Length: 159
Image (cartoon, rainbow, N blue to C red):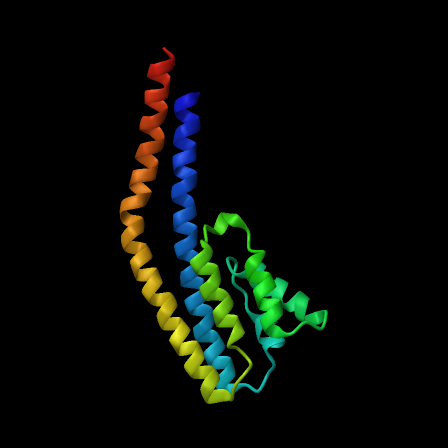
């Protein structure tokens, strides 16, 4: 039972790393879609966010739309939604800070400024994702093995 529970903990920690990388991939796709919407549509951010269908980004986008419906500014709505993201995404403080900064720059300049802002953050997210994937290759295996072996060690100590 001990081995199974520590192995499960290792799998859970490795899953969190994988989910974090998936979040970044979805965010990059979202920013690309957002750039297209900004370039070819004159729609407001609320409508653009409402039309986005991303399973992973759903809590962020839907909470932002709800806050905007309450009359909150976009930067405040986005920031509140970022700070209330569930922990199972595995996002750290730097990730949330990057997300919040991205939202703070949306809707505050002309179309060219918005497109430049999106391009810059798409590159920042891509760079982090590349680094994350390199780290994940090592850490996912480490967490899984560490879970199993720590359970075995604990079981041996108890016996």
